[in-house]
Image (tube, rainbow, N blue to C red; front, side, top):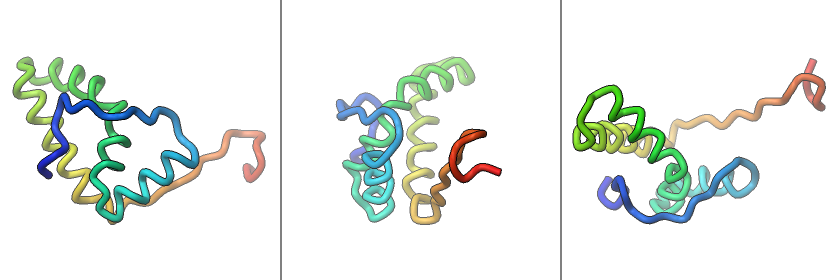
Length: 92
């Protein structure tokens, strides 16, 4: 997926809720901007963890890029789930 690269300045979303749900649906229908906004808050932590695992930042960036490409390609089969906390409406 050209266009989604480590280090691109993107608008962070943060959190969940209606905005994130719209971004997920947009990304599922092929909107690259929505996908970039959705994953941006996770890029730095993913790159940090990957760097610790593989040792080289360039290799880590490649691994994160590969993971993003897999996520992008599998978005159409993504199933959204809503979890409720114990004691909230809808819990047993």
